[in-house]
Length: 395
Image 1: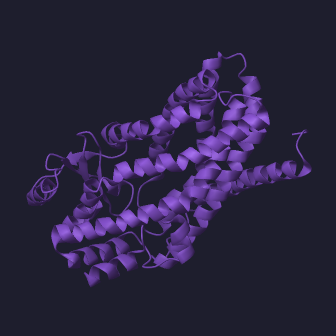
Image 2: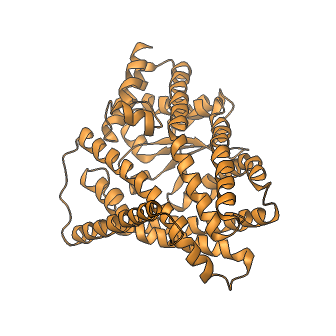
Image 3: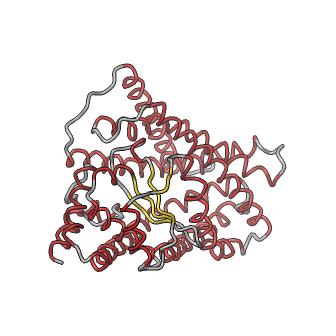
């Protein structure tokens, strides 16, 4: 740090202080909750929404601070420590260690902001053991995937130091499509039990899906209730791996016509090729930060990004770029959600069931009708439920 300006040293120190201080505070809160569990709170959507928004803003600031600490404060030390490791394995080994270290450091914050928050607002009854088990599985999977990507990416960076960003951008759509095949087939079943849906509702859903070319999709019920009381449904998969998945919390609480409207909404994403459009948009929004970040790293370090230090600096610039692009990505997401609502109205010819479904979703998920406009513009991937209900009532 001696070659940095006083302002840079102050900024890095502030980032480290925020990271360490917040972790320590949340660790104290978590220990206190384990000794004397926090009492339930009233199921107040406004208070719940305010809490979630505050934690989101803090979380974004913490994420940027932590990324800066690793990029400009710790990465070089780890690089020196891993010098004895063969060059191709250094970055993957570091990324695996980083994933595990960060998961352990974030454990107290996640305990309070995920497990405790959902429990005290009545959204979940799962045990801390079940929550911990899911989190450990997610960490191990994340570490494994990150190591593979680091191995491939690091090799590409070293072999094509000037061309690799363009190669990465060109390969991104294929990688994201591959993820859409692997995740629902192999990853998601590690966290929930998916079983075929049977009975009259399954027949109606299949008939609806067949009208739009997805009649052969696998229709599944999954035990979302093991994690939360909230309801959800989704259509996922590409290249013949299409799945229509319905949470048990939705199937058990929603009327049949409401469920069909929700399924029709999800089918709208499939019919309009929204996953592919999202892949294209995601690739586009990644391209500029990747190209600029790589140029900045090469100019400021004079080194290839295949080394640990430069790679972490690039990761920092990418995280800032993705944060800046969030409003654009969310605006696009809100647009396709509204389009899927319109598709569902056309498919079911029953906007009233959609309005009822969204009201039930609002109540079950403890959601606000309308949050602050700034929050929707910056952070929300879905339009407000109030506006969606109003649009259905006008249909």
